[in-house]
Image (tube, rainbow, N blue to C red; front, side, top):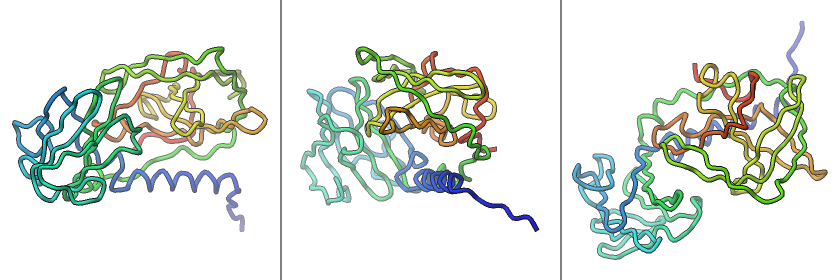
Length: 278
């Protein structure tokens, strides 16, 4: 009787798929997002009150504090009990700095019950990003879906840096403009032809790609997919489209995702990586 043998490469991809699935199901994942609200310069009341500025779920008191934006700094003055800042009980009447130029992963988290919010900065504007571990979106999530693993979609590319780092402006899923640091481009052979993608700089120094292909809007998310790739010791790039995945805005209306630039529209179907959940 014939048996199916899973190769080491397939095991690697399956493990990666499980990792990103687990991350997406986590209490602090994109599925937990329940709000993204622009903060005005000056004072912004925060709580569940309808006439407030930053709206939290109904399970939260009408007002728990006042967020103030001034001089590129965001602070929170706590006005209700039960609030935690960075995991510690906050004092009523005390003011806490919740954004002073930190990157997203280093921002202080404000928590009350199952709700967490923090202040992000995008192109000079501040927003309150709100999560609820009990969100219906997270509870009803049925899982990511994937194309069959195909080694033909793993290619080695050549990275060419731009003479000077460029900034590329692209639209986001919220209709704003995002300015991406464009390090250079990668050329590679895929499905019998030479292709090219512009590469961007993520926080962890790998190359980051935002791309569309002829599956976009049909078999995959219409706005495109993300892909990260490592630069190998010899300067080449391990470009594995089996690790292409949908951006956060495919899972939440409250995410703010950059769209791919026109140069990153591949005129072929990339039937690898994540596909629509249907």
